[in-house]
Length: 280
Image 1 (cartoon, rainbow, N blue to C red):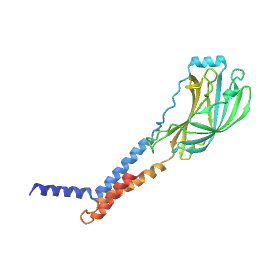
Image 2 (image 1 turned 90 degrees about the vertical axis):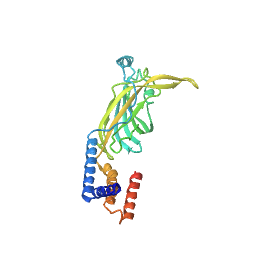
Image 3 (image 1 turned 180 degrees about the horizontal axis):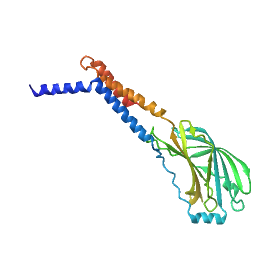
């Protein structure tokens, strides 16, 4: 018996084992349970990899100086709702109220009202209350956040609303002791709100001194962070069930005799491979 004959007999036996229905079914079960275990493990922890907004923490010296000079401004942000919430498109419109508590004899109220939002545009702005000790604004703002989708569809996200004042240095306004209150539902369009927090700090700003000269200075900033996790497994099923179906069709192609069903085997193999390659 020649070596070539032994090779083809061995190859035939291997193909018979691989194409056996029971072997294919067992392979499908193993792949299914392996993927389910990986998904379950991934769902147990949050996957927030969105870039963190860089700002300097307020030092005790800066805080004491602001308090002693009377330039401390205490913002209280009340988030009412989202008029638009599009996580995938990174487009958000938020309705909120902002209360600034300050000493009007030391801080210019008109300067307090010149606050802005980074990567955002104020659509509506109305001063509801003007008092010597505080000012209350009703705001509608459209903004974007720094989102990272590398872990899609197992990704969670942190949305940052960043408030600054480009017209005031920390010698004129220093945001201290910020507070955040939300009236948001725990579930918003496929996402669960799991955490909300607010932080104050300082960032670098620039003021126009002349026609071509800018002066750098430190300005105060407040960051409202809302962390969202995907709700349920519907998105995972919509993405991966078609993949399992395509994989199953490819396995079915192996159960057919390649000699008598060459056309069907070729069509199923090429079709499933193409579908996997172009699936989005």
